[in-house]
Image 1 (cartoon, rainbow over the protein chains, first blue to last red):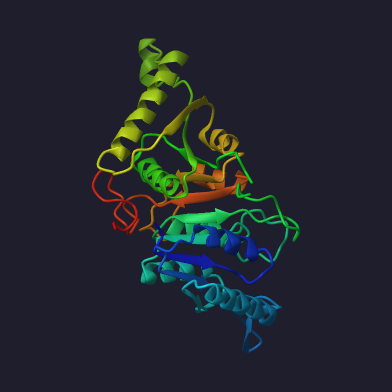
Image 2: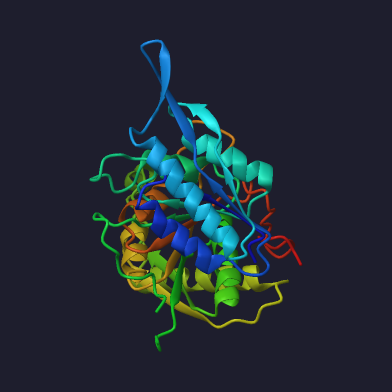
Length: 152
Length: 168
């Protein structure tokens, strides 16, 4: 049913849950899974910096997840569009548009670095601009593994 | 091993947007084998317009009328969406009194997925997300799928003609 799925991840441990759900939606009919990590840059003091302080760890984590998907036989690819601060949702929507995606999966906390945020600005904005259905995966407050989404 | 089938809940309110959501939910339920439940919220429509006040006439519908209207609307939505689709699928129906956001979130508390449409106007960059889909996004416990309005979706969700996903 889903030929192309875009999964937006910020590389945090919480993003893992969204990826787990993505895997349950994959089928032999899914041609490809595009893992999108937006490289959001902040301009400060004459230089540009990544938005998250631990950006390197996040990248490493995502790369490892993509490798794992490829090893399992999934046609996964990693895309890291680079944008200025604040355009993450639109960048994800643009990727989905260009790939003719059937579904975008995003964690509820989006790119928020604040643990108390229930629904981040990125998922909200994505719901407004996405060219296809958006699946918002609830993310737990703590890194502990939450109850399953109905799967045994 | 789980013996309880997983559940998909879809919000239906008779609009083209909810038709698109219903189409998605039917396709997903067919794919996954999960049970599918349509949920429609209703309340009595009690309105006193200024004109009514002048003429001393109040327009209101009884609870029974409001509930029946909701049931009818839900059934019509299902018929519209199923027309021209290959699936034959059993769809449960719930018509619940209350505000749509809280009704949907409560109905979906044990669901694997809650599916709703949105009236977000995609062509306008400062789009306003539909208040119901925003409420669901903030309060739903489980995963939520927001299906874009038919005029924004690239997949031509015209009910009864194209399917929401590329045809195979």
